[in-house]
Image 1: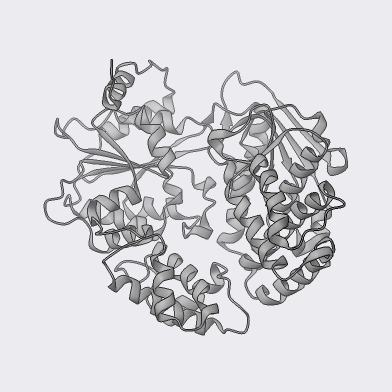
Image 2: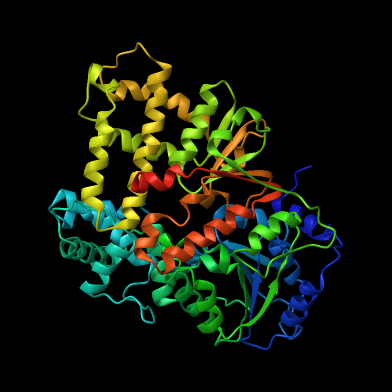
Length: 534
């Protein structure tokens, strides 16, 4: 018999397990139950402390004064998270992302992911200014530039500051003011054109104008991964609350020490900003159910408040050198984590070249590699393709071009050396082959990359897994091999200081707390000598 998704949700709801909750969890449920109209509760959920379980259970402890047909929304960080949570929440609760909800409010006449590029071609005559202008406008919309209440004003100085702060890539023969003016022109043009929108438009317009007449407001709003909200999302949340005359109850859930998306516009202090903004009562989940005691002690060096559950196993923490690191001795299903993609990809490629199965999480790495190689090799032909000196030339060019933007410099060097590792393996696999051009070499490269790269949903448990720390957030493994912890904080982050360094410390904390029973630091002091090439 056909069974609807709604039937499945009701069945899952009825099958809700009876769980023994901790005193910390019970205190959170009681606080939420006692919330007054317009109240806010902030839940600091440290790594592995049962954040999702607590958030879902909290949905069953809403204040009694709320109407029986109350409208509740659970705002998840991404589409996959929203889909995953749907089977765990009561059927009267809507699970959504900020963008999906914004789409229902704005109701665009048409969607066009390439809208920015389309308008860039129309309003920016200099071709080489279009790409940085597009990147700058995307950042501006995430930072709520020009929206009342945003700390970012629509002034030239603000746009110049964004170029430096977020490492917007542009040719060094263009002054930042030129790039900023091109971005401002494109920004104004795209906001004028409402015949079609891209995803950044959806959130920006929802944050600027809020819900219109006839919108049925929410009685309770849950924001998951609150530490990763950007200024535009916060202002959108303001509009949702304003529509209720600030009577809706608000629950913020997240871990400020896992704020690692500053480069997306989400400040490392986003959680604290929201706590102050909404005058939240703050409670914490500090008992990790994931990590063994010895691993918790490593986490406590960065976040003292986290502690192990009663009866947790001791676990193992080891320190080895890169010379002692032998992928052949690592069990299937273990993970190798690293801050940068280059050493990660290098280790993965060495693994598969020795005949061992490996997969790297993150399909977007294929684009990084192919785009970088295309940029470097587009004018190289025949036997010259086997001469790798052009990577050294590219390194010098990048260093000169991006020297005033440390964030971009770090990323560009990492992309370059990631591509170099891949190219060296290709040359090794085909020692006698002479390609007519890069495109022909790419034909041999693509199958290798397709076999190597995977996403979180399709990881091969029979393979050794390689994963960046950014990509590992929300995941866990029995054993974690932490490759080159010396890369944190990065040299370029230290140059910039402030939130850049704070974010690097958070990345270190995320890496340590992915391990359940065994954490192995694989030290590589050579990265300290390589400087920006790391």
